[in-house]
Image 1 (cartoon, one colour):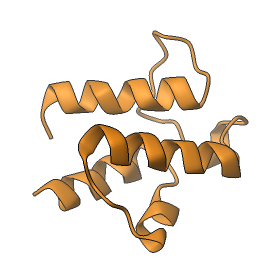
Image 2 (image 1 turned 180 degrees about the horizontal axis):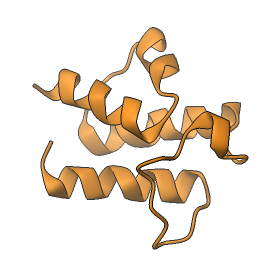
Image 3 (image 1 turned 45 degrees about the vertical axis):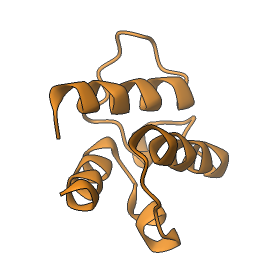
Image 4 (image 1 turned 135 degrees about the vertical axis):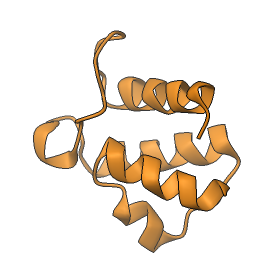
Amino acid sequence: MTETMLESLKDIFRFVLQLPEDASVEKVSQDNTPKWDSMAQVSLVAGIEGEFDVQLELVEAMQITSFETCVKLLEEKLS
């Protein structure tokens, strides 16, 4: 994943989870982010699909439980 793609993904997470513009998102997860509810999950998936032109299956979408798991999933999908 290129640095530009990584920055785009960080921006999606910050926007959807209503985090400050300069917030570090590398450690963000469902467990430590109160704004990460079911609606945020849907918004994250929609944002990711739109930005990276990928289709995520329901199982894949549910695997996104942290920024880190999202990066790994995208790396697999885009390779």
